Length: 388
Image 1 (cartoon, rainbow, N blue to C red):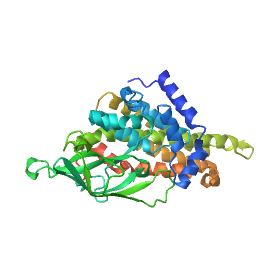
Image 2: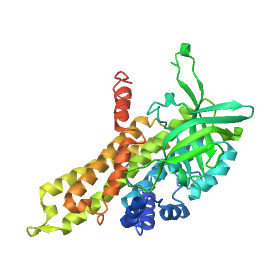
Image 3: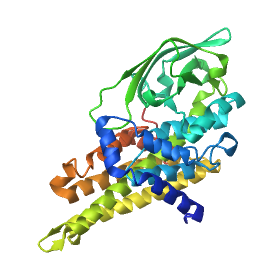
Image 4: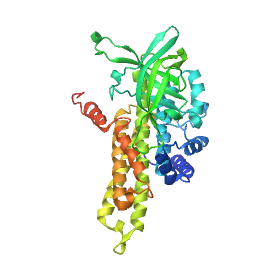
């Protein structure tokens, strides 16, 4: 593995920065306060070919991998505009459809995902399932050549911006006697956002985010056979091809948020003078920022390792989870240090740090909580007994 930045990656980051920087902090903060999507930035990145940088060229994408998409996520966030839907549309849905979709599904959805004109958001979480995907109760039942989808999903991002959902549903259950312990058989379905029988209800959020969250209800939603992605009952394995990219891009988003907060704090600490010297000269200010900077760089290394493993078809679960854990912790440390550096100004609208804290705090919980990551590492890295 070579961690040196290639000229191509440097050019990619520079190009993303040149697009996003003119929008910047003020743009994002206002959209977060208004709960309005950052459509202009999304479209600008899509027009330049960066939303679908990981999608094959034959479908209009950039032909790159997860590392390239992660760099786009990171650099956009570093310039002040983190795009949460990159995780669920460009990462999960695009990766899963590319890997498991039929030719017709790829032709239908990938070009729009590549240029940003379409979004397919991911729907797996449910009110009563938590992090246990085997407890998913949303079902898809065969009815002749069709499927009938019934159940609910919770905390689904960007439904109002999407053209379709990539829904995880139960299509069967392993027998208790086979050693499967009654675990669910899952399958993946592409569900149009206007499908009859589906209702969406926004979740009232206190945190300031441009992206809205929704509860979804499926009341006998009928889907054609062509809605199934991949093999029936193989959805559990297929989902994880998208979940690692979600963790990688989530880490990248957090790293970019940390960079943005630290850059703002360093500028303030250099310009703000008390007792005749910049406040950054005092170790009480400098050290927390320096520590957060080191934590961010360490997380960035793990994020790049995880992306490299995924792009090379190697097991990436450990690295992806570790990167997501480290990056979320680094982002919150960076924002906390930045707020403290600004003093009371860190809580004002003028300096706009709090919306970034809200997104970083969300990413410490989702798409997988820090506690479940710790459980994963304890079980898979250390061989400790499963606790749940």
